[in-house]
Image (tube, rainbow, N blue to C red):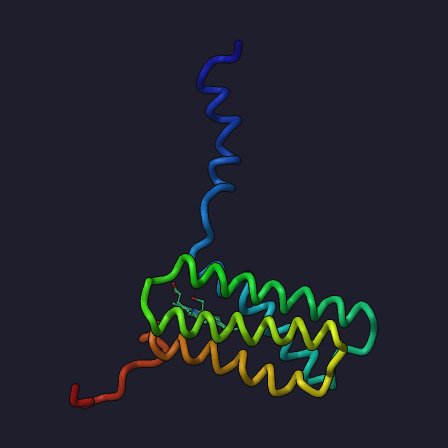
Amino acid sequence: MPPRVLTLAALMPLLLFAQSPTMKQLMLDLIHPASNDILLTTSRGGPATDKDWSALRHSALTLQESAQTLLQSGPKAAAWSAAANQLSAAAADVYRAAQLRDTKSLSVLTGRIDAACTNCHRQYRPNVFPPPQGRVE
Ligand code: HEC
């Protein structure tokens, strides 16, 4: 039987893997790249090949699932849930549009994605969106 210390060392990668990503990691490594891919392909006139459509479905589903993670791991506040749901619904509609190869809907849908990001950031990233000066509460 191996010494106990070795057993623990062998478990460390598993323990690290089990940690949930931080909000910042979610934004930088999942949400921003996925939404960026959707915006880029749309601004270039929409997907052209089967591979492009498959990439669009992948990005849309990544964004939708990430929005679900935001819902579950964020603050239990109505404004937060509303913004996360807004993102999830917009991403779900992009996925549907990608299944139907509906290029025409994409520019409206990317507008909705953008609005969801801004809606949440306005309320939850005060370093980027400072509250208006001199506002009377
Ligand atoms: C429900 C809320 C919510 C939604 C929706 C949301 N974000 Fe964020 N985002 C945050 C919060 C909170 C932070 C600050 C995280 C921190 O600094 O810990 C953040 C930070 C970021 C950052 C900066 C990360 C850094 O610190 O460098 C980027 C980039 C970002 N979001 C992109 C997006 C994009 C793109 C979307 C839409 C597709 C989006 N976010 C939607 C809440 C949200």
